[in-house]
Image 1 (cartoon, one colour):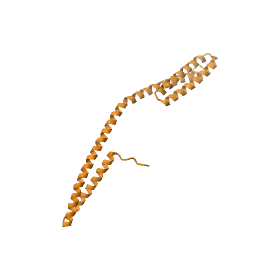
Image 2 (tube, one colour):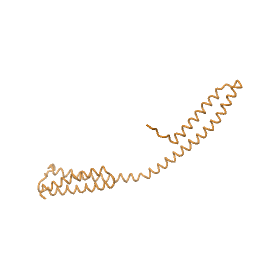
Image 3 (cartoon, one colour):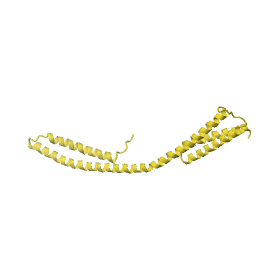
Length: 184
């Protein structure tokens, strides 16, 4: 798997870390270098010169790291502003979904009540005399489900639209069958 390119912050941190490691190594080397002979003293002066160059590299890497941190912070702040500006849209969508789900729940509750009547569990079984009324209720619920499906689809709540459309089709079929039972 291909690794993504490191971010400017990661590159700057790596560069700073490498410069710091070189400086540390040279500093420790200088501190343990004996100074008893001319050759040792020349070696110490060479390490001291490398340390000066290392300090310059460390300072440049530190400035690059600070700049990368600043750029990251600026990007994060800009993103945070965009996120905060997007929150009202999320809230509006949540409210809209809540309303649509409330309508679906209301339709389902009314379907349950009608189903209880059809099955005779509510004390009134389906009969040719009440079939037209029940059929009208079912078809009215079917029409509400169809409106809900259309509204949900227009609002890009596809899953809810599919559920509402399926409910509409089932209710429409039941309502039509009930009309046939009643002889209408």
